Length: 152
Image 1 (cartoon, rainbow, N blue to C red):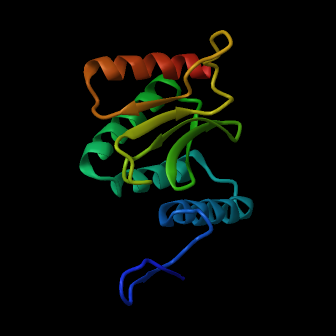
Image 2 (image 1 turned 90 degrees about the vertical axis):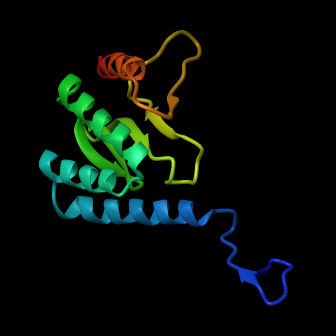
């Protein structure tokens, strides 16, 4: 415990990790414990992803639901799963794309991110994550384009 300077008030210190980061690490540990016991089916992963989406604030939930539908339609070979407690989509166990709700780490915006196995390479430098504040037709079209590129 560290003293915050206020009379009688203390807060926990976690060696540089926020409470949200520690919670994400605990979720990942649970995901890893669950994995060896049974080979997760696509349906199991989808149920986990939909449960995480259901927990999101309404604005992020709408984006995540639409993203989930886009991935199912345009990249049906990707398997839904949770990763650090967030929706992710993988091929052969390797993450390709993920969605991080703004509330996960108290961020200003939600994030659509791509991992190194996504085929987005474009020269010597390219973006791998995108801030999303609303699902507009333009944003949706860009996401479809990125998902298609990412899976090759």
